[in-house]
Image 1 (cartoon, helix red, strand yellow):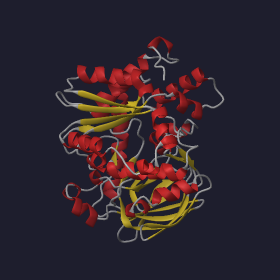
Image 2 (cartoon, one colour):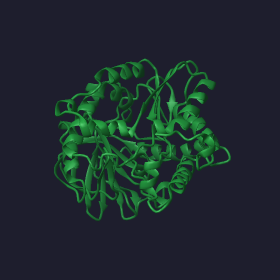
Image 3 (spheres, helix red, strand yellow):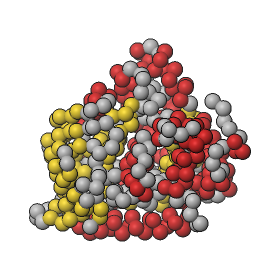
Image 4 (cartoon, helix red, strand yellow):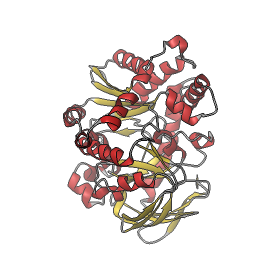
Length: 417
């Protein structure tokens, strides 16, 4: 892959400088002397280089970069033996986990082709996915347990841009995706850092209101959806910025429009239908419909990509249960853009969503979240996966239900009441 010089990029490269500043100062809130691990595709080097420079200017210790390449990934699915599919680089994930538990910050750049694996054998894709998920647990747990400060931002990759804007030329598609990323990430504002402070205040208001209500469950009603979702005992709603266990307040997702918490793994009942496609390991999964009984998916189907979805929910025992519930207004900037990004970081922030698999221990009151046993006893789910999918729309109504059975409107027609 050819890495274009800055002068040949079809967008304003000054926006990359702004995005790098926001990522380090708002996303990570990187501290002086703190080490940093950056992961991302080779195509995103123009942004990765800027982020590394901003990190060092802000006093970073050592910045380490792990690069990936779409074509290299494909060689495994095309040519590896069956035995190879069940192996994964455990050593790398163990080392990353050690680093995160030792106060190293983590930053991921999202830019890869969302449909990279669409033409690959779904059974082989599932086998690799399962082996990688299991091996990655030492690196995933410090993130889901919020042991360190972490952040995800995006770069307008060509293959991704082609998917979002299929009718445009390559340069125009990349430029259009770049404009969308810069706008939704608020780096096109006069003062991006101040814009993020204002946005965080709004998310904090919603988070605090939900915590004051202390609902026992949420009732979702929409076409194809009638779901009662119990909330974990001692749950805590979060939104935007959060303080990790190393004491650093960071904003993990840029962009973010959600407030979220942990469902009770055994108290989800009813049916729910996805309102947007899910792209998982290079495959589009659309028209998802599932039925929960006592927290577990007992029936599942999809109009497109059903085999991949069924493989996903059979990853392990916790994959059929929920680990996150998030509330996003239908009028969010991402939803208002009218674009389907084929990228969970963006599409989940266009819509209320739920996540299969691992819960976030940070979404509990502190005395619970610090103990894995207490998290489990309170209803937190455990799994090697964490996969968000969208269930919100302009037709969605949500009621909060108190422990006494009283109902309080939370959302009507997809908007906060």
